[in-house]
Length: 143
DNA sequence: GCCAACGTTGGC
DNA sequence: GCCAACGTTGGC
Image (cartoon, rainbow, N blue to C red; front, side):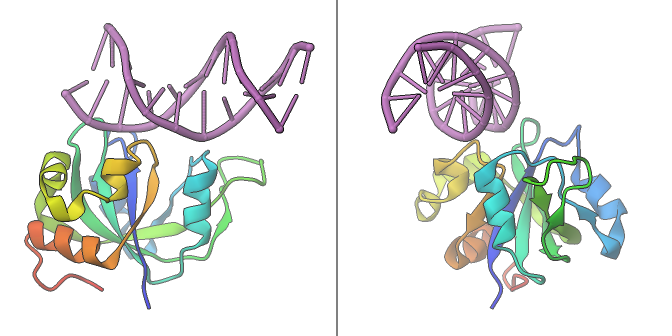
């Protein structure tokens, strides 16, 4: 069974458009230098789904991605502590879901996006996944 | 651009 | 192992 996640990126560093340009091959989610975020990636399996969130600018969930590799060394560093997975774009959110929308929804009050604001790779529960997808205009979310 | 939150580092 | 200093993240 798939698990669900949320990947944060500042769009001027790595945007949803750039992610989509990589197509089905995907791209490693590199640059993570935080243990909790890395541990979340270690827990990922191929086929897990995730939200792609624009932080700093946009502040919204703009798309859905899929984990497409096992955990491996982050090739942007020689430091063996830092590993990552590859992700590929699956589809756009028909209607991006903003942080404001998430905060305004009582069902999402325990979501990591609200409670662990600074964590850049977060777990998402199945209920949160379904709810955010619904808000984004996807009644039949990729599961 | 500011600043609160919070993770990491390093001296003791 | 504590905790102050420091650096980074990210919303506003």
